Length: 326
Ligand SMILES: [Zn+2]
Image (cartoon, rainbow, N blue to C red; front, side, top):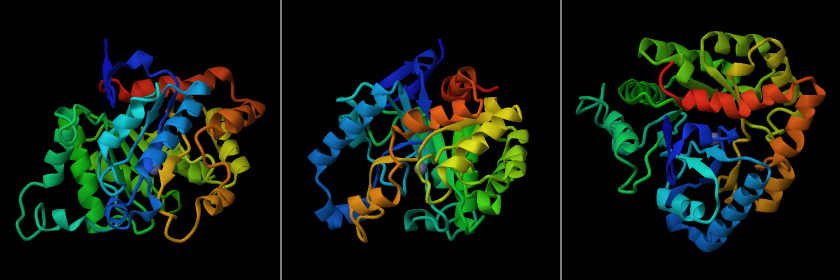
C-alpha cells in the first residue's frame, strides 16, 4: 500500500480523502516574532488553529497540504502540538520561499559563490524528506519554491534548481508559488525541464489568480497541475472570475490537472505591523478555510461542474500527485 508522510506519521494514500492542496497553519516572520513578540500568544494561537482546522474537518476536508517552508516561519513542533488536538492530516513541506535573494546563511556557498561547491540547499531539502525535519520524526512530503514579479533572479534560480535536484533524488513532488501575470509558471516549467523534473509532479501554484485561459492551457499542456488555490483572496481576483475560470478549464477537459485551495492561514503575521486582524478580515472577508466548501463548490455546480469533477479535483488529483512517479 502506498503511503505518504504527514505530521502525524505515515498515512495511506487512499486515506488522504478530500484534500486542500495549499493551506498554511501559520505564516510567521519568525525572527521578528522572537524579538517583537507583542502580537503573539502561543497558547491562544494554537487553540485558534485547532478551532479553525476543526471547522474545516467538519466540512469534510481530511487533509491540508501545508507549503510553509524556510522564509515563511516553518516550526514543526508547533504544528505537531496543533495536530495532536485536531483529527486532520497535515502534509509538511521543505524548500525555501523567496522572491529574490537568498538568506545570508546560503549566500557564500553553492554554485557561483565565494566558496562554490554543491548547493547546500539540496542536502537540507533531501534530509527533511528522507530523515525528518529538525530532529522531529516529521518528514516533508513535498518541495516548495517561489517566483514572483521579480522573475528569475539569481537567488530564485538557485532555489528552483536545488528544489529540482532534491526532486530528482527523492521523487518528492513540487509546489511552486508563481505570479501568473508575468507567466512565471512557464519559466518554472522550462527550468524544471532542463533539470529532469517530472512535470506531472509539479503544481504551478496561484494560477487561479488569472483568467488567462491560454496561459493556463499552456501550463496544463506542459504536464503540470494548476493550483486554483487562492479562493477568498478576492482583492487579487474577484470570486466570480475565479470560479468561472475553473469551470472553463473543466469544460476544456483539464479537470485532471486542477487542484483547489485558499492559500489561507490560521494566522499570518504579515499584516500585524500595519493593521489589525479585523482590518485584514474586512479587506478579504472570504479568505478562510471553509470558503471553498461553503461558497465555491456550489458556485462551480451552478456553472455545470459535476460532483464527479469536484471529486477529481479534491480527491483523485492530490492522490495521484503524491503517488509514485508517473
Ligand atoms: Zn501559500
